[in-house]
Amino acid sequence: MSGPGFPADSVGLVAPRRVPIAQPITLDCGRTLPRHELIVETYGTLNAARSNAVLICHALSGDHHAAGYHDGQDRKPGWWDNCIGPGKPIDTRRFFVVSLNNLGGCKGSTGPNTLNPDTGRPYGPDFPLLTVRDWVRSQALLADALGIERWAAVVGGSLGGMQVMQWAIDYPQRIAHALVIAAAPKLSAQNIAFNEIARQAILSDPNFHGGRFYDYGVVPTHGLKLARMLGHITYLSDEAMRAKFGRLQRVNQFNFNFEVEFEVESYLRYQGQSFVDRFDANTYLLMTKALDYFDPAREYGDDLVTAFRRASARFLVVAFSSDWRFSPARSREIVRALVRAGRDVSYALVESQLGHDDFLMPIPQYHTVLRNYLDRVAREAGT
View 1 (cartoon, rainbow, N blue to C red):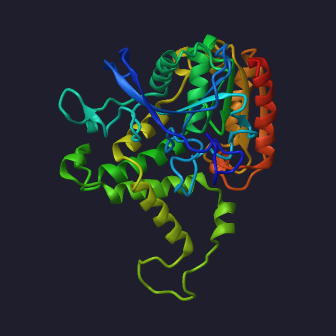
View 2 (view 1 turned 120 degrees about the horizontal axis):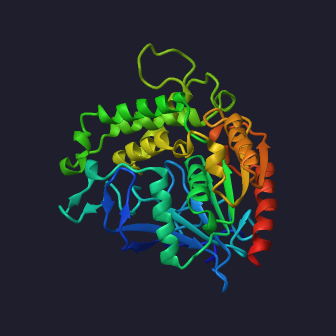
View 3 (view 1 turned 180 degrees about the vertical axis):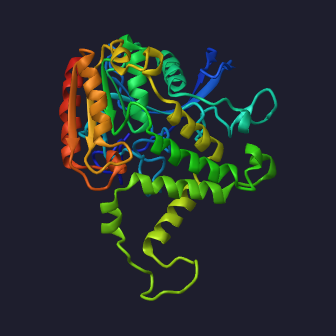
């Protein structure tokens, strides 16, 4: 709820809650988890018809805390606070918004850094590798636990957008609208290569200990920092980095050593260290592998059109002009397949500067697209 000290369009103070999933889930790797838990935040009110629920699917480094503040001392709100709240594109006066930390995450949901009930120790490398489809299965069980038969919309950017597509294909009767933002129908070889370099940075860190670093009271800081630095470069456009840093130096001379000299070096080291302080190395490995594996057309003769013929949701696909990690061309692949499959689809190309991370930014054109589309969703939901 909002309150003194919070912006009028904020959801205000929020508290995560733990949702136990007692039903077993069989994963694509062949293993079964007899039970698991998911950490969830919700914003807004579920209407009497239970028709206004919106699911937020997070990207690689995201979590359940998408909007609002955990306490009055928070300096930063949730990762998509500019988009979720009263009067914002995902309007919590009209929608009941559910945001979760995915299975395998590191913010409290069952994952590598939680205790394995069979051993009493963290799962670590014993936690099964997951796929996007596994996440969607888990999210469907979450919907059951919350009493939601059908989502008014499922929304996600980047890896979250991949989950949205999987939802539309696997549970066509449980999703009315699919909002796919800055995503791709599968990773390119270049993107898989970036993920592999990041994983090798972690795997080769002496403090990784085969994924059992919890037992040694250490963190593979160096490897995780390098992985994040590499990833962060790919999330930004060349233009954005040039505009922000250029070749600025901390002091206007060469030091002839390997310490920080350029402002961009300082920025990347800061980003790397802050990531180490909040993320788990085993989860990073797991999530990048799920990205690599995502390919919903694979089971349909490598034909994305055939895969999308299973869907009944209406789609909004959004791309950003400066995004080279998941370029607009990849979004157009999705749109063409949806059109050929006879699905209802709207497409927007947003002029942007930052790069892939633009899907997190309050770009006016972007927010207008989301607001207009979601106004239609809200009317259909009777709110």
